[in-house]
Length: 67
Image (cartoon, rainbow, N blue to C red; front, side, top):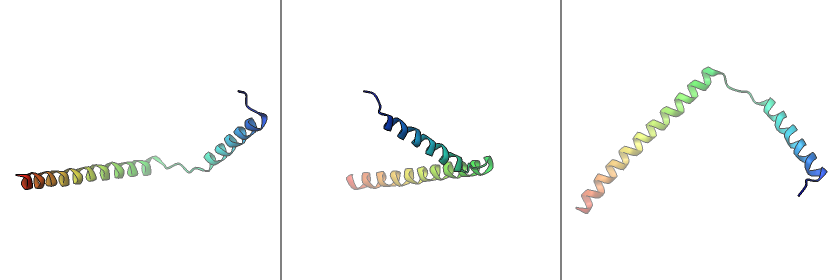
């Protein structure tokens, strides 16, 4: 099934708008990007440790109640 002229123009306009929006993006510099990445990784690891501790305590508590 072929595209109509209207669909082709809409696609071209959409890509023009997309290109214009990409020009408005302010990309972070390397220093701030590194700091933010380290913060996200550290928060993820910390949250993983907290979840593991809570899971361990819950498992011990359930085993204590079952036995």
